[in-house]
Length: 78
Image (cartoon, rainbow, N blue to C red):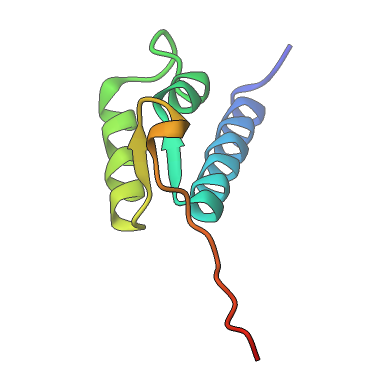
């Protein structure tokens, strides 16, 4: 059985992984948030704080990924 400390560490790891994905792509989907923050386990206020953090990092949240402009890097020809 998982202890509270182990559960908290697992939750932090999931959030960190989601943040890294958002930083890399510049966008996350609502589905990805739902998978990380299932309503039956996380209070709405916790999700709202996470959404604010995403916004401060310039990470958009969209319905579907194909509706987003994903960050791309352009290289200049030398």
